[in-house]
Figure 1 (cartoon, rainbow, N blue to C red):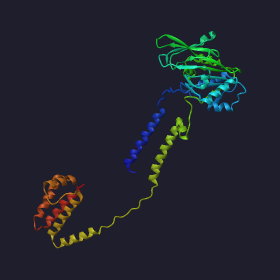
Figure 2: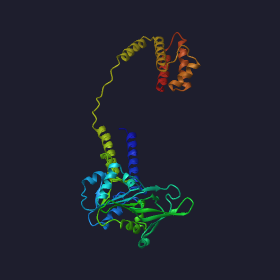
Figure 3: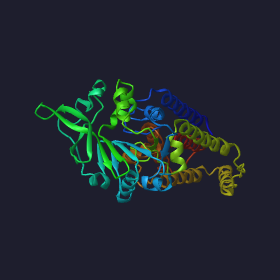
Figure 4: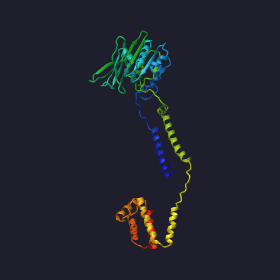
Length: 401
């Protein structure tokens, strides 16, 4: 490897190292992605809530990382339990909806907090939800409890909020536990139910539905909304809680070992450094251990020796005219072969083309060609003319590209 290549490699390596240092040391931007995951400490994660859930349960908190249809087939439902779903959007297919209804009809509780839901189970409860997209959407709203004794825990949400509400309910089976109040399109305050309880079956089963999942995120729990959240969860029966960690916007999905590595900052940089080190090792190791290239001597050109012998023979006999003639022919052949020029007319146009193609100056080229024309016009030549011709040709070819 030559010196220039080494310098370039060092510069590239330095730039990569500086980029890695800048990437590692730069402050991380706040991640406002919807997550609701129990392991996420970002603003819209549920790390704080999950770690405080044991306050509302007498038993160990269970976690479901699969579809609710698969999970409920394996869990013991002989003792009452509470399923907790919190996410911006919830969607259940027919089998999952039936599993939720059967779970509630056995005397269990299903708690859901969402902005939007698609489920046949909710449809069977004669409930409809509207997610407003006018001025009501993401506007300041006050969330109140229906019970007069809980009014002190009402809270006003001014930011990080999406307001949804129940547009219709089955009044025979439904109890309104809370409402949301906000200004509508005409700047008139409107109040709608957003926290309800629906009785299911004959064994005390129930659906407790809430349309403000943002209230359970780390952001609001750290911004004076913890009393509101705790009051909502106080409606849950004091029984074992099953926390859903599958129907989450921030659910961890790992489909390959490489994705697992790249999702962790530490593993990602360890992978990058390993790849960079491996490339450097291959480059330098390959240069150091390559097979020695054998030196192959140039083939001897016997034609040169033969020509030299013939030239000496002519020179010894003093036949300078013949030698000059051969040198002129040889030089013109050299011009034709290398520069593809017509040598029949050695005029000014020829001199200009030859000077450009050979990178000689126009003056040097003219001196040589004029001397050739002069020698060709003579019938007899001297040794001094032969020497002068040789000097001019050597000077010309020495500066030729």
